[in-house]
Length: 86
Image (cartoon, one colour):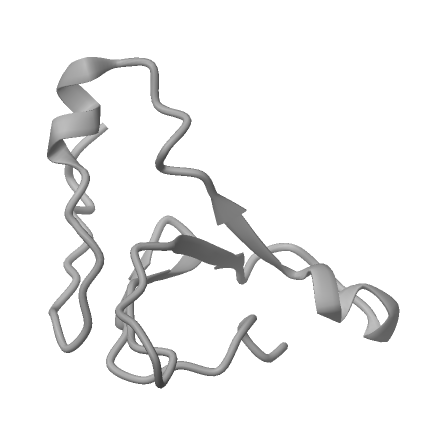
């Protein structure tokens, strides 16, 4: 499995719909509010392993309701994936 970007501790990890999701954590200086994922169902080779993890920009949301639902930066939290939601 490819290494996740940036060393950090205390991340929230969840698996859902073939992807490994990671949120937040602590990089030794500050708590992070980043969301990224690794698509475990996508075949890869040694060349593309550095780009295997994909970041999702939470700040680019144009929907005010979803912007309010984005949690602030944190570490040592839990993550849950709801398989039954659409």
